[in-house]
Structures are given as C-alpha cells and as structure tokens.
Length: 58
Ligand SMILES: [Zn+2]
Image (cartoon, rainbow, N blue to C red):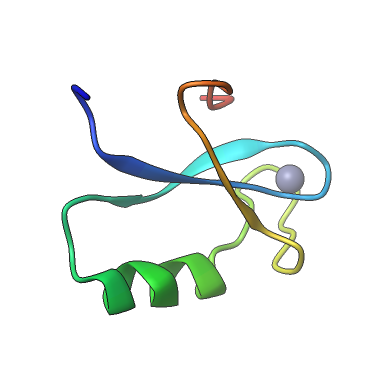
C-alpha cells in the first residue's frame, strides 16, 4: 500500500480526501464525522470510500 489516505464519498458520489494516515484512529474518525463534500457541500451521508476502487474528483 503506497498511500494511506482516508477518502470519503458523499451521497452524490463525489470522492474526496478526508485525512492522511497514519493518525490516531479516533482523530481520523472525528475527521470523517465532520467531513463535508467540497463539491456539493454535503455533510450527511458521508461514507468511507476505497481509493483502490474510486478515484477522487480532484
Ligand atoms: Zn458531493
């Protein structure tokens, strides 16, 4: 695994970087909870995305 980055995906399907790992799991979880989509501004329904399957939209 070359990169350890935590990506989120909003209900609209935008994928974006949430956090760079490693970091404390609790901190990463907090970032994920507060994550907002930079494309559409969605703050609810953000799920963890796999960068292996999905590419971020810039
Ligand atoms: Zn979005």
